Length: 155
Image (cartoon, rainbow, N blue to C red; front, side, top):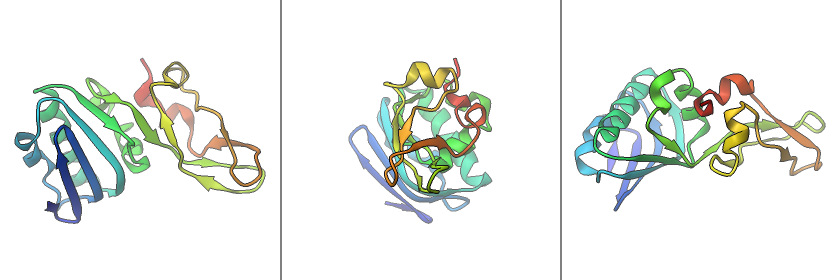
């Protein structure tokens, strides 16, 4: 199914979003088509604007009223936006997410998938998990300020 520039795939309890979440993406309309407990994969989301965030919030709030929401492979662009809205992480379980890392030694940049469950204690302390550079094997750092980027995980 297509919602504007966003591809939507529903398979059982799994919702996969790929593309742009913007003014052409009425995500709130999906609530009635999904089961009470849902897993959302947003790894393919490439862009979110303010109207898209409004639609994302409508989707999450509608789903939270009915059951559990687990976010897997959350796109970096969504993590950045979700940190700006304090209650957005409430009653939503983030299982894994992508984060931008940079290597100060060689300049390499990657967006690895972070297991939020395995690193929960560290993330709650606003500490990014260590990441070796795939190019020079040096130590990479989170490309954003951890206290800003990891706010969703603070208890």
